[in-house]
Amino acid sequence: MTTKPLTVAIAGLGTVGAGTVKLLQEHAGLLAERSGRPIRLKSVSARDRKRDRGIDLSQVHWVDDPLALAVDPEVDVVVELIGGSDGVAKALVEKSLHDGKHVVTANKALLAHHGNALARLAETSGVSISYEAAVAGGIPIIKLMREGLAANRIKRVYGILNGTCNYILTEMRRTGREFADVLEDAQRLGYAETDPSFDVDGIDAAHKLSILASVAFGCEINFAGVHVEGIRHVSAVDIAFAQELGYRIKLLGIASLSDHGIEQRVHATMVSLDTAIAHVEGVFNAVVTIGDYVGQNVAEGRGAGAGPTASAVVADLIDLARKRALPTFAIPASKLARLPVAPMERHYGAYYVRLMVKDRPGVIADVAAALRDERVSMEAMLQRGRAPEEVVPVVITTHETEESSMRRALARIAKLDTVAEPPRMIRIESLTA
Ligand SMILES: NC(=O)C1=CN([C@@H]2O[C@H](COP(=O)(O)OP(=O)(O)OC[C@H]3O[C@@H](n4cnc5c(N)ncnc54)[C@H](O)[C@@H]3O)[C@@H](O)[C@H]2O)C=CC1
Ligand SMILES: N[C@@H](CC=O)C(=O)O
Ligand code: NA
Image (tube, rainbow, N blue to C red):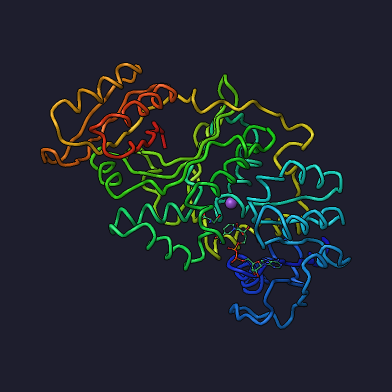
């Protein structure tokens, strides 16, 4: 057994970087045992050398220019924890791979945008790019899919992929607090992205979903092909109606294969209270995979924060120390398929629609007519409180229909004089987990 340490350099010492340094130091003995050799942190780079991060950097080289880490001949692995799909993070990862260094990264934005090219580059350089921390934080979902489920064809993968959104939706429901107020909490706790609109607008979950889809289906990453919606439009009223109807609202990422191609979508979703995923709360994420031999598998754990993310980063380092490397997205980059994107208009599902209507005779008949004309079949209707000539909420749930019909019906409903605000639509997903 080799005792030569695995020599590591880390770029970025924020939430994840500082958490990773702490874990490497506190568990040094355990990691050496599990890896068969020590994992040695040689150097670090970040923007502000003087900042107190609550970690001991006295035995570590400080390097001002992160790109210098890529050319240090002693370094085996560069750990990129800066973030961002371009700029320094991309330059560092490319330079490191070119220079024959393994890369570990938590950067899903980078992989979603440039993963195909980076996987090819890693392969031609004979090194690996590992990214367990990039998808669902501490859940070992990449390991689960690339290794544990490797014998299966996977047709569908979905889950709660953003800790910040799940935390916000959970707190709003439990406490009735406002969206902006809860988002500040998530930022303080280190869950949110540098620009939190990436979280709340669904972009971060879409980055992760595009990576999961590639590993699940053996296809190239196609981030541009993800239909993305966030949670800004989800209001306390919808959360309360969801509860009354037996649902919970979750931001889900869902990828599946159909006759039309690959469907990838991220949006607020009503899931039945009977499902396990409805009860995944706070910063927890959950990923459900359906394999043809194994059936359904559910993995749950913390999706963000220093500790869980560091756990995933260091798990990748242990694999490298053990000299275990796999193709980036489970099969060689040159073999990844380029799949057609199934248009969202062809999506077939059930819908929740909330209208704010003037409480007048005939209004419901007009709404029902618009639905009927577009062949959307109503499942149930709820109206709470009567206040003639006042604006009141009316909720409709539909049977399964094509999204294009639903959109046409909503466009007609929005134009009715009695409808005071644009209709709010949330997809209802029938899930088994
Ligand atoms: N915070 C979390 O819970 C999770 C974050 N991630 C990902 O991990 C990465 C890091 O995220 P956080 O630690 O939360 O971010 P952060 O903002 O707390 O830390 C970023 C670090 O990068 C450094 N940095 C920024 N620009 C730099 C530059 N030009 N040159 C050198 N250093 C630079 C900053 O000084 C800081 O130390 C991102 O890709 C993020 O998406 C992934 C999973 C969970
Ligand atoms: N901002 C992300 C961090 C982890 O990927 C999240 O909230 O899930
Ligand atoms: Na993970």
